[in-house]
Length: 261
Image (tube, rainbow, N blue to C red; front, side, top):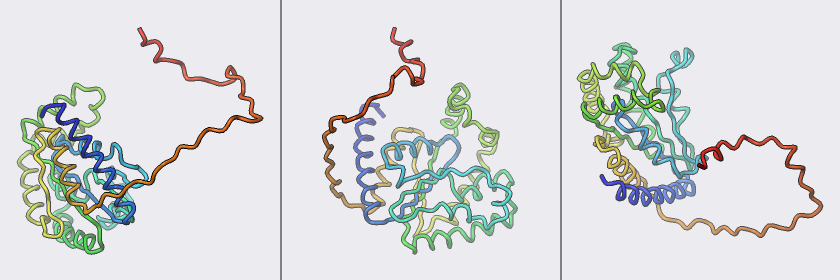
């Protein structure tokens, strides 16, 4: 989509996100949003735009690394449960417990028994969360094989994004159909009435971000409240204060000045 239309609508939606967060904080609601999808599907970009203007004290991103040895000995859901939102908080999970139904299943990182146990338990766990009052929203970012390949090549040539190309990411290219089967099985078992999956076509990143934010706003029953008026006080005159000699301070070299020409 055209950049001007995208930027205008993104700004409008981000203003609404701030209003929504204000309601969440005031009402004590708990919001949990799960972002899943294939590698390079655009999850990170959508999360970044959602978080851009939110208060980080009341909204956070959970992106867990591989489990530690201690965590491997815990109940599978345990390290995720510890990071659920508290009252007045929004949590965005950049991948979640569904790692077990996706990469762990396809790459053989879990046993068949562990996989089957997860598939049986996850609808129960999610129902418990919803029954306890958590607003749970699950997104699947869907990207085509051609677009994923293009994004991988773009990352390969970008020194700021090369870290996004892990060996597991690259192997996903050769296991496209395996991941498709795993996703289909996951949807069949976990697309429930209390915690349904919402699919976002993400071949167009800009459209996907707008669609995700617009839908997220529609899923939270927030009300507009006026923020408290802020009065900026006048700065009083300094009394009995003598500033230290500026030459006694260490200043960062002015690199920006070298670019002035």
